[in-house]
Image (cartoon, rainbow, N blue to C red; front, side, top):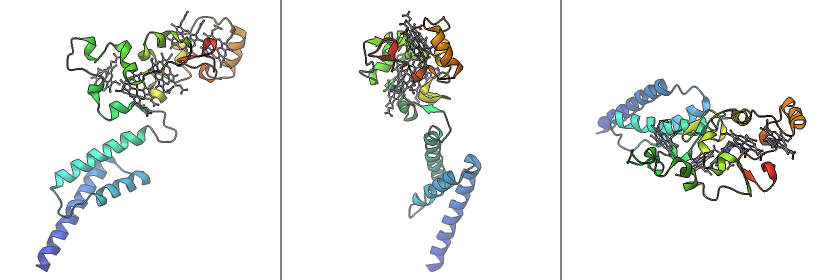
Length: 198
Ligand code: HEC
Ligand code: HEC
Ligand code: HEC
Ligand code: HEC
Ligand code: HEC
């Protein structure tokens, strides 16, 4: 009896060790924080009788993948951003099974963002693309290399459309020279003050 227990204990250790090795190979947990999280994932989750190796590994792989996505957007210095409903795989909150209507979305593209971002517009002065629901002219729906799901660096985004001369040109030239970004003074969406000044 005693020997049998020792035998199972040994098998458990062996299963865990191979699992650990496999996942280390898969995810290359070189960072100490990730490694700690990873180890605690393995050891906390171990049930009294271990399920088959593939199951433990699949479970760890799923948890680790989710965790990596989660921290990717939060790491200091990282600009990346992810959209919560996308990361949580709520695809059907936006995508419809009927692909022939509204480009496969649940409502027309110009209305989609307002489904969840209700009462989004604050102020009487509304920025052109925001007023017509063209959020996708600045944002991506799933994830982005830039903060706030932007299609480009926040310092570059206004120049995508605003190449025209400023009425207040002399003033703006000074800001541009000092590399003060447009967003320091203008809200990108709307505002009470003219030109959505903050
Ligand atoms: C917040 C709403 C939203 C969610 C949630 C969402 N999508 Fe999308 N998705 C869109 C929009 C809007 C487009 C169209 C983008 C465009 O035309 O520029 C799109 C486009 C796509 C496309 C077309 C190719 C591409 O990347 O442009 C695929 C494929 C796709 N989505 C898959 C998914 C999957 C899979 C999920 C869930 C994991 C998901 N989407 C979740 C809004 C969403
Ligand atoms: C199904 C609901 C839903 C829809 C539809 C939706 N969003 Fe979101 N959005 C969310 C949630 C939830 C958050 C996270 C809010 C939070 O964390 O406080 C979010 C956050 C965001 C953020 C902030 C991200 C960040 O990193 O700070 C942006 C930008 C955004 N959404 C843009 C859009 C755009 C553009 C659309 C239309 C293509 C859209 N959303 C449609 C639910 C939605
Ligand atoms: C002209 C470009 C532009 C358009 C169009 C635009 N946004 Fe944004 N959005 C931005 C920028 C830039 C930021 C980052 C602001 C910051 O960090 O101060 C942002 C941030 C956000 C955020 C996160 C912070 C916040 O202000 O709540 C949400 C949510 C958001 N936008 C939703 C939307 C929705 C919904 C639409 C369409 C109705 C839209 N945006 C249209 C440029 C735009
Ligand atoms: C997708 C194109 C697009 C982007 C990107 C964009 N804008 Fe605009 N912007 C417009 C349009 C369209 C108008 C309306 C022009 C009009 O009414 O004559 C406008 C108008 C404005 C106005 C009001 C001008 C006026 O005379 O009333 C300001 C201020 C402004 N944008 C600032 C910004 C800032 C700051 C950014 C970057 C955060 C930005 N825009 C990014 C398209 C864009
Ligand atoms: C330091 C603050 C500040 C910064 C930075 C700034 N603006 Fe402005 N912007 C203003 C003020 C103030 C006005 C109003 C000028 C007036 O009333 O004549 C204005 C007006 C505008 C207008 C409408 C009138 C005009 O002059 O054409 C647009 C469009 C505009 N800004 C776009 C931008 C863009 C794009 C950027 C980034 C390159 C930017 N602004 C950066 C303060 C700023």
